[in-house]
Image 1 (cartoon, rainbow, N blue to C red):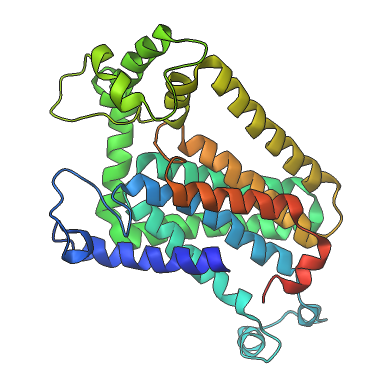
Image 2 (cartoon, rainbow, N blue to C red):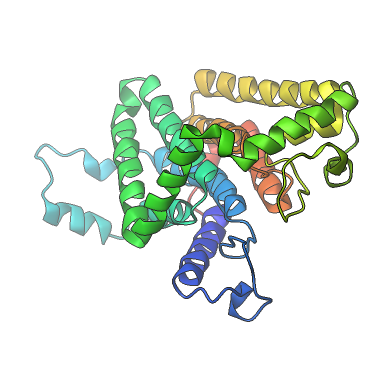
Length: 321
């Protein structure tokens, strides 16, 4: 709930900032030239990376809630019955989660981050497939998640359709003309840097210092990072560091997948799926963005994975507190 509440506040702030943008942080800060801030983040991709973690964890609360006892009726409930159920004393705060997820997911698309949009849609697809793969008991939730994914896209279009369309156009342009992509040119130069120290790299956070002698891209900007978590991890730590990072991610992914398959509790299973999707979404987001070195994103991902690994069936009773 803390993650979802904070994500909603940041999303609302970012949307309001986007609508009333005057090229200044918080409307009173220094003027930004050429940047793309969203909410408290100077880079919109960092906001989208945080939402990739928050959205699956929020959906886990909905899935873990399970069907209530009042749903089992002999006759099909009418819209009046559903309205009464939502207004009854038995209704808890999880009823609000789908609306908050729409706001958070729509804001991630409106932020304009291409990598964030791809990672978020991949995370929603993974949540849907994961629910469907569990069997008939979760097939209803898979359909709801699929519908929710469509609604998130529609919410993003409704909030800022021109921004979403522009994001799609920029993504298509970069894929269609890779030779003009500054990101790919930086990666090519970064690989030349990696060849200078292939095994152990140049050291953590040294890209901004070590990169200039290998840079061929002519642009009036300073590259302090490689526009990719994985490319920079390779240049900073070499093959050894990249192999250790991949091994850590792989072991966590396998542990979460094993827990998802073998645990019996609905709460633990839903949280395991959410942690697995958040981990995978962050991996995808990090391919073409500088994401996890942002401390807020790293802490949220670590908290999500930690909760998923340590989730117990008893947590279902406290999931809505």
